[in-house]
Length: 186
Image (cartoon, rainbow, N blue to C red; front, top):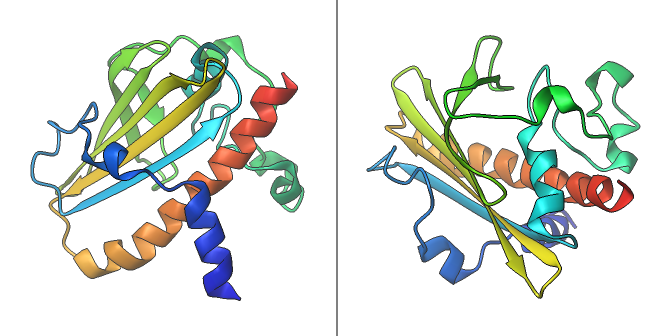
């Protein structure tokens, strides 16, 4: 049963072979990564409607989107907002965004080209991180959202390849479902 659930979750956010092979913004930040996590999903709305929701993501900002059926089990103070908030919509290169990776961890906006490219960088100890989001219009009215996380150097490669991959898979699957709810209800 667990394997079946994992397979369903993975299928929902699986990047295609072409998406994995294609260059993404931020690839040059971590040139020799020990770990690369590629995810992708489709939202039934054009990039212009998806973009603002992604710019406001973050700790002490709009939060991390999860579907309502999951969020109802979280304390209200830990739920992401369900509307666009003008305080968080105007990102620029160099902006620092608090991250959930630790009390003082942050991401810095490294590249931004609305409504298609958003890139972040961070450093955790000796590990360099890049996180890229790319939005592409497909079928005239939907958006393919591609995400790539690159880490290097990584001390515990096996831990990242197992637990890190699983955590990334679950959080991006939650983001995909929560983002779709928010975009279609706005």
